Length: 347
Ligand SMILES: Nc1ncnc2c1ncn2[C@@H]1O[C@H](COP(=O)(O)OP(=O)(O)OP(=O)(O)O)[C@@H](O)[C@H]1O
Image 1 (cartoon, rainbow, N blue to C red):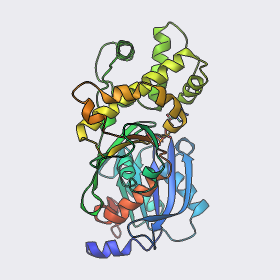
Image 2: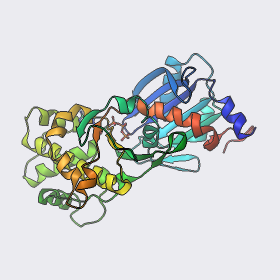
Image 3: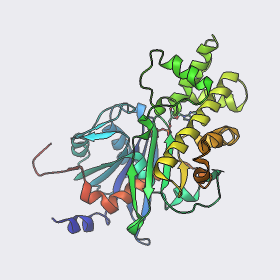
Image 4: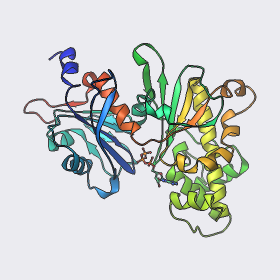
């Protein structure tokens, strides 16, 4: 079977697309759109709590049992982390992922894998971009690379580079870059988290768990016992102005997200705009708008003329990950599949 045969075989049959994060597994049954070349139709979609399942196989089986009534032979997984041989390595996931085990248990012919934010990058010319709420900068982009950034369980980021045939998406491990404190208060927090110095990733601060880390550090620095135990409780208390430490924690989270976003915008000259697509940013949009995000995003004198030309939107992560993964699969997946079934062999 040559490449063109493989590509011909794929688009007609429904296939599974799953966006697997540290907290949520978003799973869909997809097929190529009959009306719109290069687009996908979503036949069924569900969101699962990863922690409720002992393995990814069980999570996907729950979806298949509930929603799938046709034979499915292909699956594309959008997942943070790195693929090493047969395994996806990601500290944020509740379980290891062994691709051949998954493929065999579900009776699939192929399992393809891409990074979860790479998948979001392939959703940019669809509803991901259309549904965004404007946060700062001009209302329209001037063209050029576009960033998708999302704090969830971790901190993901990818870059869409425009070009022929829809351009391409670069995945990144930007969330693993060293956190750089800006204010004296942030230096105090960093010193509290890493009293001996050493590596602290941006993801350790700018994520759901990171928000709780900031809050706990502020309480410790103030000599208080923390009252709140989840990131959700911190944002709820901050929105209600019910807890001064929670308010400050959300402010520092938003400011640090601004620095991170501006850093990536400078690195990639992201004049095409930026989509913040984290799981919970929409729910704190008002706080984000009133925070130091924009001031920190714009950075200092030399970067400001460039960064002030970059629009930033906040959008839902939601269905876009599975849609982007499905679009990538139809475009590239058959040529870059990680684990095809070889008759009689299990890698
Ligand atoms: N309203 C909220 N306020 C603060 N944090 C929240 C809120 N809702 C969810 N979170 C936190 O966001 C994280 C989950 O984010 P998300 O829904 O994007 O999950 P995910 O897609 O599994 O994450 P990732 O793709 O980064 O692994 C969890 O740490 C959760 O506690």
